[in-house]
Length: 172
Image 1 (cartoon, rainbow, N blue to C red):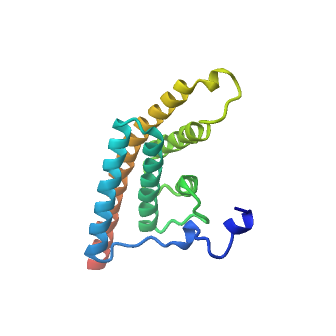
Image 2 (cartoon, rainbow, N blue to C red):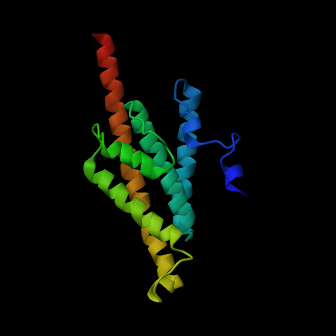
Image 3 (cartoon, helix red, strand yellow):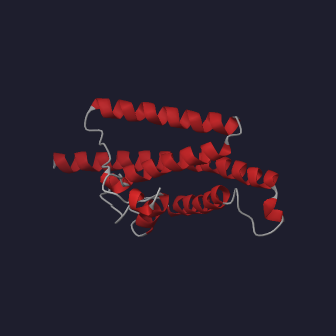
């Protein structure tokens, strides 16, 4: 596949796909079901030793929760091409998001990059140890699951606050 094919008009960029808002109960229920499946699969893939799958699902879940928070707060990064764009958007506008949790997500993202992209790469003989690569992925997967749960709690809390504030504003 050439770069021309990758950049064609037919390819769908993340920013071309708007977030489906929970404007009706069906969307909310569907999102709840998807989250339950994703969180369950994160746990089962981690327990089964499928660390790369765990890491990929964790990144997807964290990105979605950050997108939800940023949508609620009307914070939009210029381009959304991955987790890094959400994190960069939040760095400049925390808007109630816990800075220590943001730092933890950034550190995890960097560890994720090193773990995933380093599976076939090495620059020293020590880095060529397959068992160490798998162990690094296991550690990243375990940390990612914990961070994903913390991000979920934080975003849920901030979204509830935001909804409450909007309702109070409408009452006045």
